[in-house]
Image (cartoon, rainbow, N blue to C red; front, top):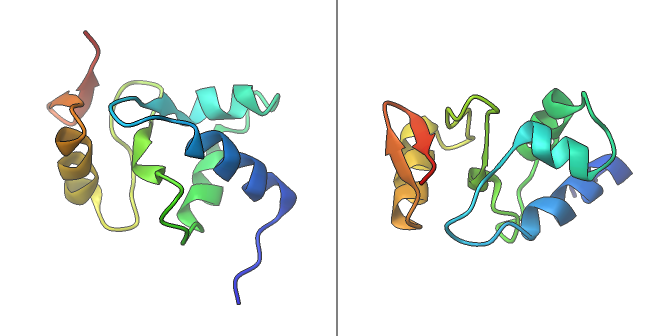
Length: 95
């Protein structure tokens, strides 16, 4: 059985609200939790997620690069592109 901390649960709740075709940065997720400076902790929480209802692939780095993903960066880019996110050179292109 996998246990989540309260912080992880809060991260997952924020990330569940990111709709298809949208992304947030790890930093933006941290701000929504009133935890500025906790971007790395957000990434660590998402790395421990096994719930398919939590779209971890929709969370990117603050500089626009896609960042890590348990199934690999190539897979993350593939999923984001399928959802309509434009990516060039490993970075999300905002219209």
